[in-house]
Length: 497
Image 1 (tube, rainbow, N blue to C red):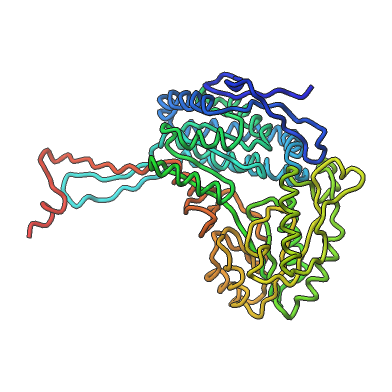
Image 2 (image 1 turned 90 degrees about the vertical axis):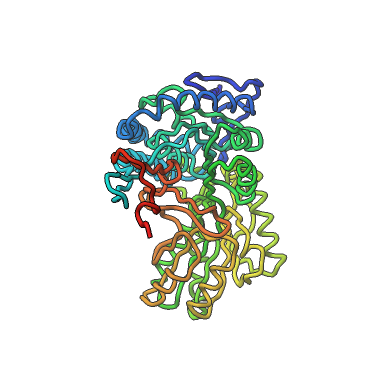
């Protein structure tokens, strides 16, 4: 019998009020049920918000370093259970063990970094313009945070949000993706084991339309952190505007790697293979476009096709596997629809373009790594996020032309440039419109102590990762202390003429 999971609300495990459930299945072997989860709704969300609101009264009074100690302990537990958690994640999400171990490690790194920030939530002190008066600013918690996370990084991304929120003094209502609820449930179990008090972290399983939107619409949710599609992010922003609640949106990407004619081509090849086909292309930072200088275009395309054809697909629990399945059938159908569009619009299919079948692949949602060449910037596959193992290759005449092509989408998350020319590198750093730029490294590889996020329709300006995450989960309060024992009027009494 598969394990039956429950919501955690106010420290108590609970089924959905409706009694409904849904199955979580292994995308590499769809016959395997990973677990049964409550299919919750607004009533479950409202109960979780009430519990978080009540718990906030005590939690925000914990000293920030003490809150950090609990998060640090959660990191210690993650270390001890890293191998077990990686296998659980591979079973429910599909990516290979090498990557799921990295996903857990990112949670560990975030725990230790966030814990240390409990002692560095600095404010500012400054001299007053008036005598016998003291001025300072300080960071204070916001309240109840709604956390809505995606399925592609079911440990790393929730920890990016939850750990800084907890250290900041906020309480949490957490809706994980319904494709990867088991990893999320285990994370919450670890937080409880680490000493997070009842009601401080609540998890409500279910769909985005029922649970996610109920979180956004609840007036007692004071801030929402969401990672997902641009279309859903726009809807969340629209709803949240009604109460002016704070919203952090980490949305889509159409990331590109530029390869100049002076680049180390073997290094660039390693980078594009990892960027395009790691996580089966299911990353917001995945390399979806490859822009190659015309002088090395044909040579590099041949190198790329040969190496890609040798990638080994299969169940990620096998350490020899390099590319796992797509997360579900709908995702595979979506990816295939884009390859059909690419062919209709005139792109040259070099490799792939169809489901991967035969042997053990028949039980899961596998798709062949796909390469299109001679892609024009106006083509759909050059503009829209596919979220699968499909790479569009474009030709550039110069660094300026390459940057123009790279900037030619509505997104601006990650970017990469391979070159030995210092002038090209610095021009790219200056002129590329993206939140992240890598020089001689792929478009994936963010580190937890650095800001993460994008520009244009990739987000709304907030950043996750590093100290910038605490800017979202805290408010700045300015404090004036006047010990002059008389009325003093700033600006008026300071300059009387």
